[in-house]
Image (cartoon, rainbow, N blue to C red; front, top):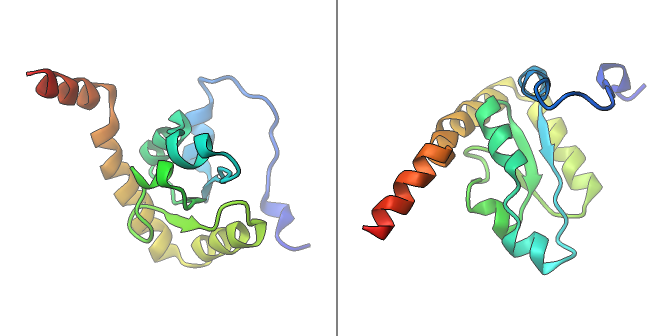
Length: 129
């Protein structure tokens, strides 16, 4: 029935368990909305960097706030925000193209190294001088 047999809804899990679920996922979705300026321009969700570190393919809304870290076709697939069909198409594309999924996930994991707390502290210290 439209692939739902492979979807698991697990409900609330401990924050300590979340990385295990992310690593086990076939794809990670970040469907942020473009309805508010805050979401479009200024939101940088911690979840994004957790997803990148998991090394799994990401399908995310194409928003300026997410494009600071994500590059379409390089470390994620970016889709039209607030468009469930576009999100579904992006997820389907990743699920049916194993090479693409592997490439996106691997690049996201490499890029995540630039967003660790240590890397951020180093950049701040360099900026401060």
